[in-house]
Length: 317
Image (cartoon, rainbow, N blue to C red; front, side, top):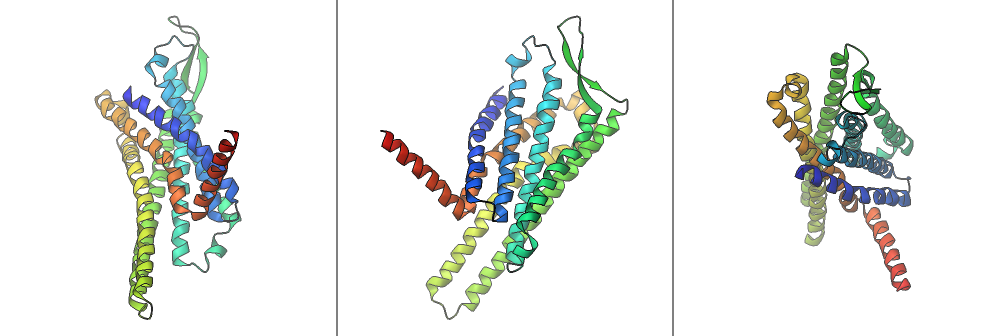
């Protein structure tokens, strides 16, 4: 119960911040490719948080124990759990793409605008949305909600398998899910390591070759590079920590299917899912903080928006 309450509270608080992220990105404009990706990330975060709030409601004991005209567990799975997983995977891939784009900015700074254009960025983000929706379609294909009469209760909405071969079909969906998670995870990890390594080499080279510069300028170069390395390391660290339990859990589910089917492991499975959902909510919640530290323009527009609101409130007083 405490896990459900904390997840709902975290998601609700983050949900109030996510539209603000999108509003700020709209004001920044889409001339820069990173703003397109950050806007897409804000949309996916909002979708994951909205579905998480609904899932928290359906998991509430007061909701479950009510004599409702439908099966709350079945409705939760198809209307909350699966859509939430889709939006989370989308956010993962967009995060990996943003990290990859940052890596290109450091590796080929003079050609990056030719390689990553605004149109290509938009197409890539739309492709991420479409592909992730299609990858989890097998789960909807083999399951559907249909009304059935029950003697003990009123009309019941129950999960119905539309095919006898639902087991392999559903396993295909889970396999795609695992591949998607690990692919985004590996791309983000490799790009982050490359960024940190290249920046470290450049920082060392600058300190060695800037013999004609003053010691203050040397310190400025080193300080700036260290700040970028720390920021990227923090972003990647949050993503890796929040995504690792989910990757491990899904990998175990695919390789050892009895993990979710056998009652012997149900306590471990429930504990892992409580941890995974909480970490996913945290990952979506810190988005605005990441934006605020990543982009100086974002920070400037953020301050301008709130300074105007403060002036209006003062004038009303």
